[in-house]
Amino acid sequence: MRSRDFIYFFKEGTRNIFVNGLMSLASVSMVLVSLFLLGIFSVFSYSVNYMVEDIKNDCEIRAYIEEDLSEQKIEPLLRRVAQSSPSVREVTYISKDEAYDEAVDIVGKEVVTGFSREDHPFRRSFKVTLSNLSDNEAVAAKLADIEGIYSVANKQEQVDALLKISNLIRWIIFWLIAILTIIAVFIISNTVRIALHSRRLEINIMKYVGATDWFVRWPFIIEGVLIGLVGAIVAVLLIWLGYDAIHALVTAKTTAIALPHSGDFMGMIAAGLIFAGAAMGSIGGLITIRKHLRV
Image (cartoon, rainbow, N blue to C red; front, side, top):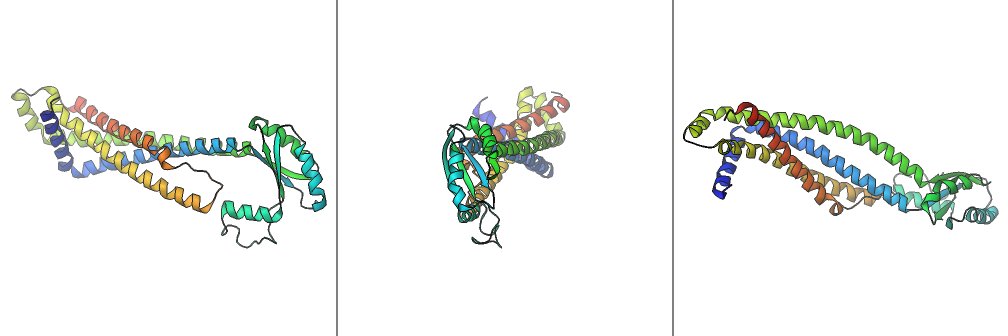
């Protein structure tokens, strides 16, 4: 394709968009919504995988102590916990005061309003660090059998709960994306079809004077691609800005949730969304051309 031809096709495709303003806006909106959901799905999946890996790399079990156990019995209990398995690398005692401070650090002062360091429901515990995460469940079972231990929380429970929720959300978003993509392609096809109909006399004249089939087709394909690209770029900007705002808010409020920085993955997602937008637009244009443009 010569540069002069491309400039002509681009101008004609752009003109089609503005001539059919309302339909073009509807098409861009549907592409935007579809790709916005696809972007959220991608960001969510990456963030969940990041958090799962972060949890897995944190080889830690929390063993909560019975409320009525005296302070004199803490040291012997700590030794029993430390000797419960060769995989136990370190055991740290978390007092009532430290448990309160930890809760404030994790969920924020406003969440624990009504409690104080002297009066709160947070239990004493042992933070048990393992040398091998694969022994997580076995060590947790041994700790649960030790007298004086009220309950045991391990990272595997968090991982399983996180994956269960994320899989449900992924399926919901997947089907929403599939439905909205079909709608977007259909609306783009109708937009291009209206442009074809409004220019049918001009197209017939072009064919009469010897224009090739693809010379006639390219402006309508580019129209669809431009619609897809506009929707994709707006979706990328909304997702990027929105994620950065959420990341700043979450990191300022709690240390319990480890979210990746947008720079680690957003470029890859942006490229994928822009490609998907162009693909949706070109497919919508090609469908209409094959069905309605008899050239």
